[in-house]
Image (cartoon, rainbow, N blue to C red; front, side):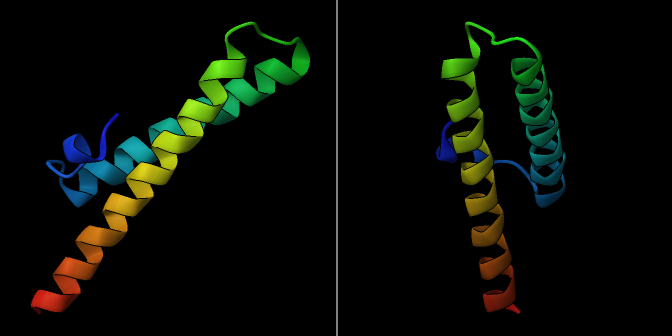
Length: 69
């Protein structure tokens, strides 16, 4: 997911997406710990990057909101 795409979402939608991605990451880590998965090697880092991008966009939106007030 690109940051440009994320910027079109509202804060509420971003928080929901963040919750979803974190849950997906947690589940994937758990399943990988139980028995190593072949696709986990590429999926875990990409999910971590998605979470970081979402947090970045959330912080940008918060900064813009506080600056405009």
